[in-house]
Length: 155
Image 1: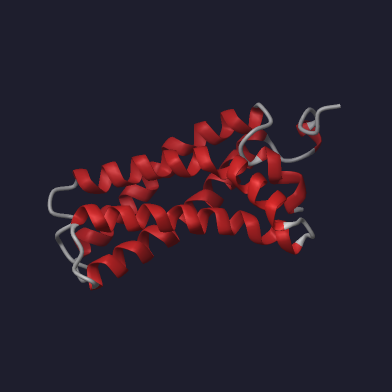
Image 2: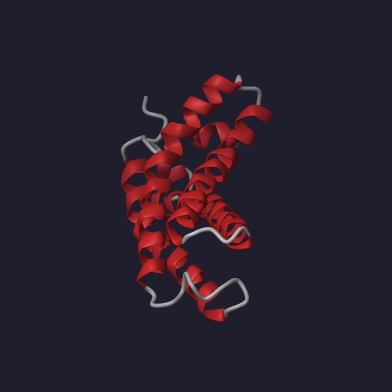
């Protein structure tokens, strides 16, 4: 029997997708903010700043999935395989959307860390990324992919 066939007794598909999307957003946001703060402090170009932010978004996104799997007793290799399967598409969608949005806000990337424009654009871009990633995560979970591959192991 399919592990996700009986969702009527568990959380709804929308609730699972919302949880997965929020989980992904958390890792992406940590990586984005940390990457942009580091790059800004070092005086990096916009392109280098975005590259670091994206790399750290993937690192933190995967780490948030890896930790409970490893704590739950899975070997690192198996946990990493599951994390990649669970998060890669969602993180990719979020990163494309949030970076496109923040770059589209005139002056946001040049505003500096002390400017409300920078933080407002970043917060808005992450919110838009959540909205776009939600149906992607819902579609993946409904097909036993995405966070569906780790859902049972997180509990």
